[in-house]
Length: 438
Image (cartoon, rainbow, N blue to C red; front, side):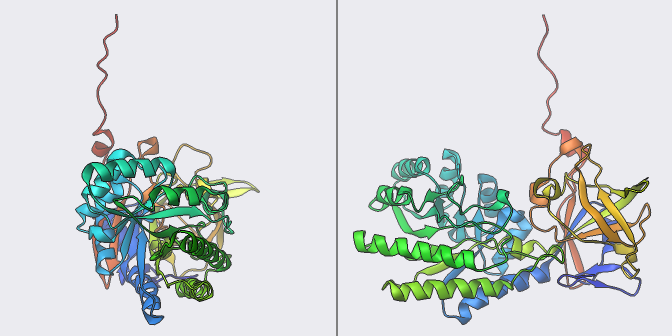
């Protein structure tokens, strides 16, 4: 059994995280329950930041908070001197409510609304990552009306396809994100903003995908961006001060996954940028990156209570849990794979094969197909590993199921970070029928 971060098995045979017994957490807070290992998140954040410091490169490490957003995680990011990548007005508002320094917030998104961009200006965010020509016109209008300067990066698609799922590749030419680097769109965008009174172009941004296990894609993307920067320097005397190479660093979900240490990705990026800065006679830009999954993905564990058991003779054994695609859509959406353990029997041999089904009214609501587990009975606690990224953040109220609670653990302590939704929460925005017939 592969354990992550501070996970251990105690003398009672129970899985513990951060020195806290998961069975006790399940009893106190109920299930389904997301449990986050703060020590592991801190170690990952420091690993990224310290790598840049050791190599003497000016940088910002921005937590890509679409992976998991809430006030408490933003406060943790602030404690660890991270910057913040937000992709909506809701994430930006949450960050401001958390007291996160607005000058370290980068605002992303392929269809930012006028009101969202106004909120970004009013909040004095540190940078807006510009995604399309429509957004350029909105930014010009808002900045001129407010007579307020804004730092921007131009997001480009470099034509690099990461080796990952089609739904989470973003750097190829056929993408909803960014200006194409190869067909003239990026040049046209640059010309529209380079001399604007209020828009200060820092440089370029790209993001080639998610759950990436090799460095070649990042190096190739960096090379393409540096060549474009060199061209703009020669033609327009443009001085690039920031190169944002995105995130997408992979983590281990199952034994089939072979991620690199986060620091390896960073070193490869730096070496590529340094090589081309020297080759092209460019000043070394500040490097920004945006880890999300690699900060919180394997720091999160989902706890469920086992319920119904069904045997389909000669085909499959099912165990059902009290959550499912309402709190983890990734298996249905991406065919994502996970590993699990019966948390109250973690010291027992894994001798049974089950398909772990959720309780949602969908045949596709299966969290793990053919999971090798300890014998499971109703009332047992099932722990599914590596659900810290895109679990809670993509959760829904499908079938009117309340979203789970979220708990943080560290050094034997635990605290609620997000309350469990109630049935009252589910109906709080509903209105009674008021149209009159006849």
